[in-house]
Image 1 (cartoon, rainbow, N blue to C red):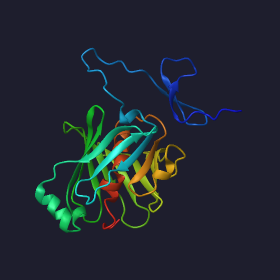
Image 2: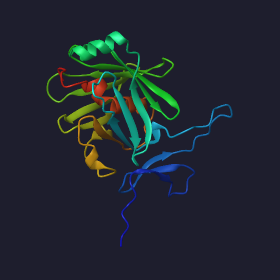
Image 3: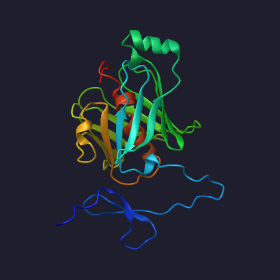
Image 4: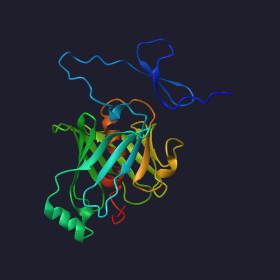
Length: 245
């Protein structure tokens, strides 16, 4: 019996090099990842990095009343490797969220964490018509911005870093949750979708449970912008069904 091909991921380079080569599920790509050489003073890694995963499962934790947005991030095997947590909320702010529909007009601050701690901070200023998300490192160093480019038609978000367009999120079908994430040249580098034939596919059926497929290891700052946008597309970008978009 013919064995099925292995799932997409990084595997030892069949060409014999010291790095790993990306297998897209059908064939080997030209993308090779060389082994890193940590400095002697750098602490050893303590767990998996979100940046190394070809598949991320995003699962919003269910609450009776959603006063604090919180997401679990799993790898393609269903193991939790990270989280997206809303931080900096006061008691008054939670009270406002409890008694009103003004959530979209409040500033949101989210931390993206993996096993080694916070890796990105996302700040979504108060939204009136268009959404905008500022992406920073945990220490406050800027990475870029995710900017809603239009209001009508298929929503598009531009990924901007250093004043330059580095990519975009194209909402192909918002109801079906199909989003293409492209680089500056318009080439798809990742996808947000419900259509995945992997682990527990029938579990991911609602708008706050979705799959992120990263096609290959991305350079910075695009890698961080893709992680930021893909993990927060529901909370930070679409926000909620009461918004204009």
